[in-house]
Length: 43
Image (tube, rainbow, N blue to C red):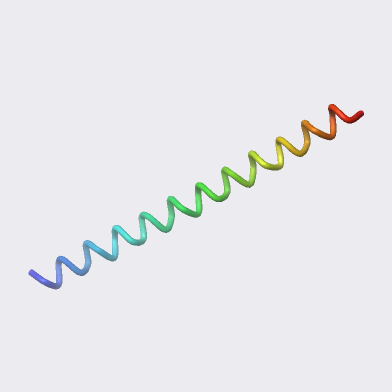
């Protein structure tokens, strides 16, 4: 029982880590878009 429980926790941690990485990529992309829009307005 404990072995399965530990495996489940590892899978959850891995999934959370992957979601965090995806969120960081998306937020980075959004920041780049906003920077690009600001540059266009400046011109």
